[in-house]
Image (cartoon, rainbow, N blue to C red):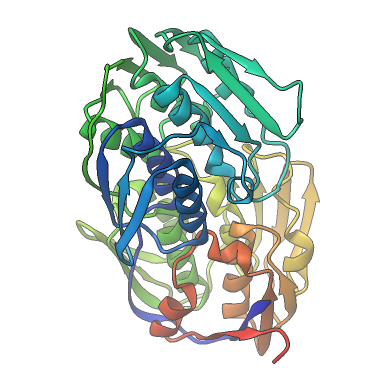
Length: 423
């Protein structure tokens, strides 16, 4: 077991480069097996979720080869199994994309229910609704941790209205529909950047997908997809995390290799709080040279404020001047990290989906645990601002979504190291 040790109150300065988007990578890797060919995927983040998906694809018969830290070659020509029930599938939430990919490739899929961060009920009913409308029969009567899907022949196109704008369901249906017969229309589709990235990847393989990034996506199913080369977009959430790290430490950092438009909801809030924000074509500079002021946050689907930045911004609001209110509109139990955050001296009260945060003048170092991926990032942010030494354990959650985070922070001037808990 490893943990992070952080000695806080170091102003971060310098330049940090953002890795490829985790949420795009974990959709694009499964999508590659729909094609009977070789795909080269560049700008992959070096994270545990990518490693787990590679292990799963290898077990399905694909050949996965990393040519360097960020480039993966997937040879899907010898994929010969539609059963994905191994432990690597259960580790991560995004393994559910194997349902759409295997249905599209074989017309059958047997997939273990996904794992990943546990911050409330995260149903896949919209995924299954879409597959049913495309002709799949779904069996959950056996092992309650395994879902079996099968179609007689080939999936067919359908008009599918999502009851909620689910990111996962939008992507999963889109993957399956890429090789279905006829036309599929997804209405009330989610619009997140990684949905657009997955659609662009599938189109590069020969799919015919239009409208990704809007609330109506139209897919004309193709008989066959081929291989190709694709570069994943920068990670919006990683970029936002470093921007907040700069803001809370009174720093001056430039976050490069990002798409500034994807960061609009965060940059607007940082400017409201008193940060100076300078945007370029592929970078954002954050200058934080005075006490920040409180603001209110409501998480929303894109282009609103992302739920995956809610724990991080809450840590920042904890040291802002005044009282802030955060409303979590996406997940019903994402505040389970708050008790850990309070160990730093944060003053926050939870009222259902609301967090009322009274800013304090400073934080004290503490020994805390990461309760999930983004909560782990919030612990790092608080520790960077805190007086004295902090330790963060359960950093396996953080490794799921942040590539080389301690190295990047050290390069900016943070005093952080990864150590064995027994050392």
